[in-house]
Image 1: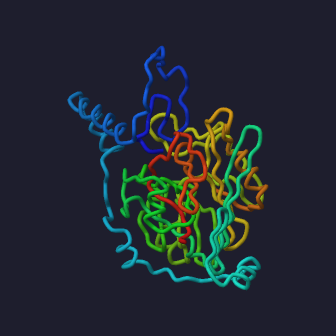
Image 2: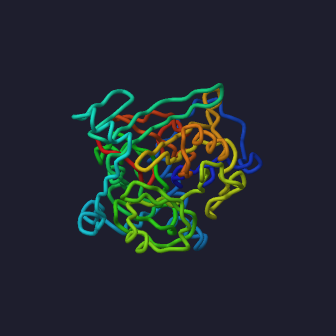
Image 3: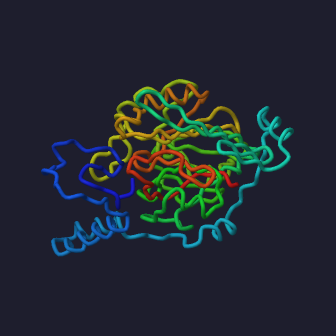
Length: 350
C-alpha cells in the first residue's frame, strides 16, 4: 500500500482497478525496463511538482502521499524512555516442552528456537495457490516485537520488510498494518502508545500471552496499556472469531483511501492467527502471479487459518506489501516482482 508504487493498474490498497480505468495503449516493440522504486518515486514527485501550479489539490496529494511526516525521530530511544510494559511469561505445553528440550539457540532453513521461543516455517502449494506459514511459540509474549521503518514513527516513512528486519536483528518478520498510510487507529507498539485515534476493529496482543479483537472506538490507548496490552494492530477485519469464519467479510471495505478501497477478490494476503496463549500462526499468501499463485479471498484466507488451528484470525495489509522474511531472506514471492516499502513489521529477534 505504498503510494510511491501506484500505477494505473493499482489502487492505494493494492487492489487492481477496473480495466476501463486503465487507459491501456498498444505495447511498444522496444524492450522496457521496470523502473526502480527510487525512479518511480522521483517520477511521481516530479509530476506532482509540475501540477502544483494547477491548484491546491496536487499540493495536498504530495503532502498526503510523498512527504515524510516524522513524529518520533528515534523510536528505540523513545521506547527505552517511555515503555512501562513488563514481561509476563505464561507457560503452555508447547513452551514447557521447548524449554525442556532446547538449551541453546538453533537455526535451520525452516526453524528457529531460542529457549522457549520457536519459529517453524513451511510452504503450502496447490494447483493455483502458494502460501507460507510460520508457526510461532513465544516463551514470553514480549518476544513478538514491532519495528518501524527507519527507526522513526510518522506518515510516509517506508522501508522494505527485509530492511526493517535486518536493522532489528530479526530472524522472522512479516509486514504489519501499514499504519503510516493513515492518521487514524490505535497504535501501541512494544508497550508504548504512538497513536490514539480509534477508528476501526483492531487487534491487541497482551503481555500475558492472550490476543483479542476489539473495537477501537470503544476504548482508549491509555486504557489498553493499563490492561496489559503490548502491541496493537489497526487494519482488519477480523476474519475468524470463536473458531468460525466471520460473517460478511466477503463485502467489507477498509478505510476510504483514494481510489478503490475494496479488499475483495483473489489477492495476496497477510494475516495473523491465534491458536492459544503465546501460540500464533502467521500466513502470507502469494497472488496476482498467473501459473504460480492467484491469491485468495478473505473467506478463503479464513478457511486457511481454520485449517491451521486458529480460533481467532485478523487480516493485515496485503497486496504488494505481503512479505514473509526468515533467516536473512524473503521466502515468499511479492506480487510486485520484488519487495514493496512498508511502514512497520512484526518480528522475532534472532
